[in-house]
Every structure is written in structure tokens, then in C-alpha cells.
Image (cartoon, rainbow, N blue to C red; front, side, top):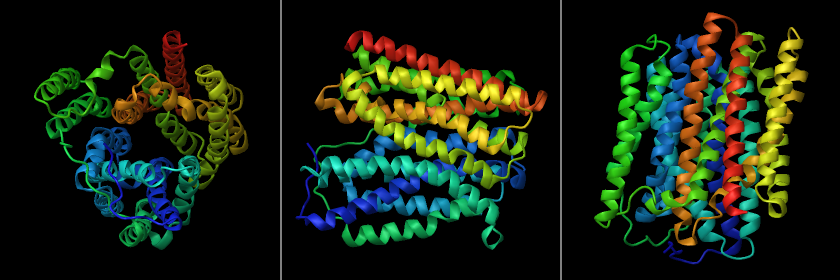
Length: 468
């Protein structure tokens, strides 16, 4: 049962509503990439350790991933409009806090809060589109949403480089967070004025215990990967990770207990027995494991290893981001005719892009910005071929009644994988960089990226063996 609009919304106004909620999604998307470009500058000014650098990105994703399903249900309980406005307000305030942070640990805590508020804001975007566009305009509305998602990456890289380079009002890297404040205020004002209210969904309950236990379990698993290098990989690091595994196992038992009591667990337990879906989720994990971590490693390598300024480093990614948008469109169209074969081909293109990157780094003493940009467009095209049709392919075996739960598990898995990749591959990169060189660290990271993408392709092939 879905929420329904409590009063009519005229056709023209709903497009302004779409612009409002998509602007919030754009702000969220930009924030994921803008921080990557600024990370080396942040680390230098705050004297942040490699573990703290990884944590600034990873903790944001962990908070978002573990709370995003709860955020969606809060929208059902208290109204999409109310939770959206609360989420944007929280995201705006926590962005200000991030910009005012005076130390690495403070910035990590602020990013944790920012990720939690994003989990309130983002689920309401798709919910609003779903509720307002039930006619022939739905495809156009979701098309606009998809384009905005793609452009957010390009805008994040470019804006991050510009803001750090321009050093507006002398605030330096802090501008990458401060920029959310005026945009957040405009979105809140627009939402108050034009966003319709919706009748609440009856019978929806929160699994607060499940959300807390999942967060603690993931923190115990990913946290040691972030701090292990600083702690010389002492015994307690491995003990905490083992504790995380125990907590995750306990989370599954807790969810089954919630279901037996007639409650609403965070995950749909029936989906755990869907072999095609579970193989697809494994493919999702390995794809995103090599996603955000790739951009973090490349940014640090360019700025620290090749001494490329932040603005030029951001521009290196711009052709990649635009190629990604083009490939996303191609991938979506081709997947209708060729199915998961397109995704496997996309993995092959990514591997080719990584091979070209290795060749450029090995054969050229100091690869230029132009050469790096050209090489990365190949990787970006492969990413676009996979990411666009991936959700549809993975969710294809899920029954309509479980579509919402499946989508929530997909999104959570993707963000957990992003965080795990940043933590694990980031730890390897920083350890090898400290012991040897940035070039050798990059090559080791590329090997891990390649292994993860090959694992993604293997699980996609395994999934195809069931669904074909």
C-alpha cells in the first residue's frame, strides 16, 4: 500500500516539485565526489592520518547505508514531505558543521551525522517521483532523475577543484561543505511552498533495534580497516573485526525474531532464499567495492604522486563523468535486448581501462593530465555500461510485492561496498605509499580493482545461469 496525495497537484506544479527533490539528490551526489578532490588538502590542513582520511569518506557511507531503509519508512509514517524537509535541513546543518570542523576526528563525527541526515532526505526523492508521476510522464521524470545522477559526478569533480583552487573568502577546502548551505536553504524554502502533503501509510513500523545492530556490526567490520595501519594491525584490530562478524550474524537472528513477532524487519528475509537475487547482490558488492575507492586512490595519486593541482585533478575526471552518462544511456538501451551480457561486457571494458592506466603509469614517467583523462574515459564508459542496467538486472527475479525491500537491500549493499572499498583498498594504498612509493601503491590498488571487477563479472555470469 502506497501513500496517496491528500490533495490534487496540478500538472505544471509537479514538475517544479520534481526539480526541487532532484536538486536535493544532485546535492547529495555532488557531495560524494566533491570531497574526494578536496581530501589531500583537508588532510594537510587538519594533519589527518591516512585512517582519518579514509574515515571521512567511509563513515558517511556507513551511516547512510545502515539508515536509508529506516529513512524510507519514516517517510511512510510521518509523510514524505515532512521527512524530506527534515532531511534537507539536517543535511544543510551538518554540512556547515563539516566545514567548521577543526580536527580530523571532529570532521569524521560531522560526516557521520551528515550521512545519517542524507538517509532521511534521499529515499523521499524516489518516493515523491513515484507518487506524483503515475501517468505517461513517469518515464520522462525518471529520465531526468537519471541524467541528474550522472551529471552530479561531473559537477562534483569540477566544483571541488574550483572551490579548493579559488579559496573563496580564504576558507579553502571548507567551501566544499559550505556550498551546501545556501542550496539547502533554497530547497527547503521551495519544498515548504510547493511540495504536496501525502496521506500516511498505515501499519508501517520501525525496526530501530535492527538499524542500530546493523550499524554497530558494520562499524566493527569497517572501522578496523580504517584504523588498522595507524595501530600497526595489533591483535585488538582483528578482535574488533571478529566481533563485527558476530554482530552481523546476530543481526540476522534479530531480524528473524522481529518477523516471527509480526514486526517489519529491515530486510525481507524471503529474499535471502532467492538464489538469483543473492548472486546479483554479490555482483553489486564487488562492483561498488571498486567504485568510490577508485576515485579516492586516483585523486590522491594525482595530487600527491604527480603533484597535479586540485583543479586540474578535478578536470581529469570530467571526461570520464560525461562518458559515464553516455554509456549509461547506451547500457540501458542495449540491456533490453542483450540482458546481463551488456553488464559483463562493461566489466571487460573497465578491465581494459585499468590495463591502459597501468601502461600509462609504467611507461610514462609523469603522465600528463590529457593522457590520464583519455585513459580514464575508457574505465568510465565501462562503469556506465554496468551501473545503468545493474539494478534492473539484479531486481528482475524479485516479486512485485518485495520490490521496495529488494531496492532497499540493493542500495544498502552498494553503499556498504563503497565504504568497504574505501577502507580496504585505501588501507593498502596508504601502507604501500608510506613504505615504497605512490606509483607502486597505485599499481597494487589497480590489481585489487581488477580482481573486484572480475568477481563482479563472475557473479553476473552465475546469476545469468539461473535467469537465462
